[in-house]
Image (cartoon, rainbow, N blue to C red; front, side, top):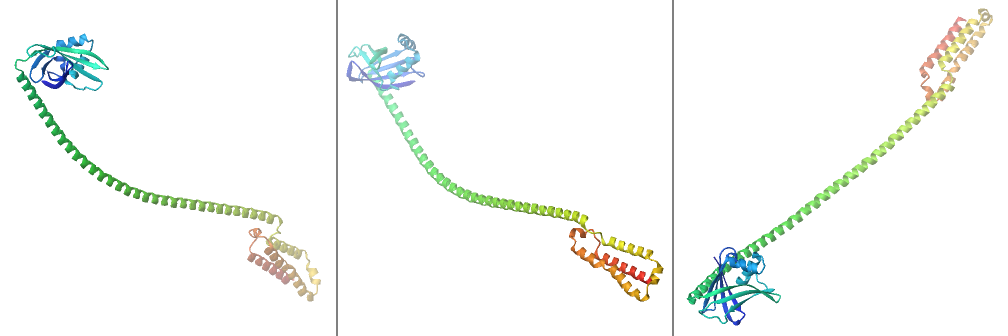
Length: 337
């Protein structure tokens, strides 16, 4: 059972004050409700059925849900605002203590009023009992609201303490967070500087290696060019030496030996016998000088020849042996004489 008590002002008696109690079952007034009206001395009671509520909604051409909402706001003063007001009318005026009265309720919006409904109230035989019940309900309601208020205040204080605790913890966490961020930032800066220095050193090393590699490549290319130029010069010298150098000394020595042999073979012993004995020594000296004279000239030509030609000629010791052989051949010739 839901109970609501409110003060109402009757339009025909603005100076009088009435109290209206509404009792209903369920979630709203759509299933019917009971009214009790009293001025503190007399009391009137009446019932409104579910069919009466539906009939009033149909007469006003309103949906039942919308009509029940306006009816509940008018009788219980719930969700009322300044734009919409509700008024009451009581007939007859003033009401007779032992007679039946009619209570009408209407809605006023933008200076336009329309009647929501009316209910027939009968006089209560014992109005004091009805007033006592109203007072008891009001006291109980007041106590309930006071207890709820105290509970709400206690809850509010608890929430305030919790809020203060959370605020303190939040400040502490915020301070720790800022300190941690500062420490992490300092570490990050330190690591970043180290990485920058390492990257800088690596870049310098790469630059140095590139420069060194380029220099080595230049040196290598220069050396290869020098070797190529030397090879070209050697080849040119070889070609030049092969076309202009005189014949080797071995060939000359062989030619000299063959010429002396031919001369010895062609010379007649009779002609040699015709010469005086005294002329043998000078002739021997002249022949020896003639045969030994080419040796200094060949050595001098060997010294003046380019290095390219030296690889194709015999070494100097071989020339000395040839000269000695030529000298021994001349001595043998003289011995034959």
